[in-house]
Length: 175
Length: 77
View 1 (cartoon, rainbow over the protein chains, first blue to last red):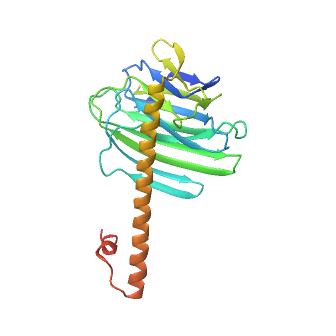
View 2 (view 1 turned 120 degrees about the vertical axis):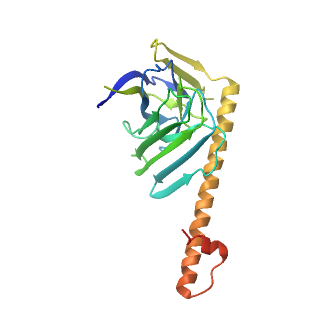
View 3 (view 1 turned 30 degrees about the vertical axis):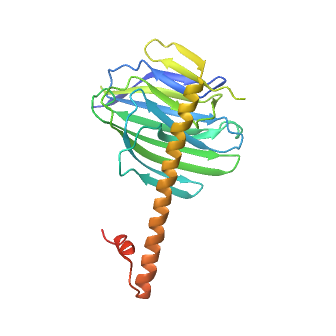
């Protein structure tokens, strides 16, 4: 059975914004996918991490593997952690060469259920400014008991996402 | 000073709103992200410590020296 993607919304940053929230998410799909392409307000020509939060942010487990500038960083959570925004990838910097963004995809499974939900992501970034690259993937197991009705994407806490950053939300279901 | 704003797009209505973050929201974001960073650094330090123990265990095995319990733990599956 084929899986079809239904485009639900796209947010395009025209100036700058700290967070992008998709609210009013229809509860008629099996999974959600967010594709993002972002730069933040760093003037270092460099990269930072992207985060996401659901409306029902709760305790979680997580694992990830990143290769940043040829250095491998990996981690797993042996214990359940109290909520903080969940890591979901990499973002570029506003003063990097035009057209260079951090890109990534985040997939959230069974977002309408009343049971724990899992999310996986895959993201990469190349900085033309510093000619360095990074790539990473990972996942979260979120111990929430409520459906996800809104999702917020953000960069580093003290920086806005800058012009031409985009994020699109898709709903998945079997056709 | 940078003004931090938030953008919300309602997937049902298509309405887009953009408003400044409140001081409370800015503070919450800072605290939660700093907590995450601290955890990542803690895990990275633990991974580095494990790698050091493994290297020490390997060197001792090659040299025929006795391992500590911690070093032996890194070799037992």
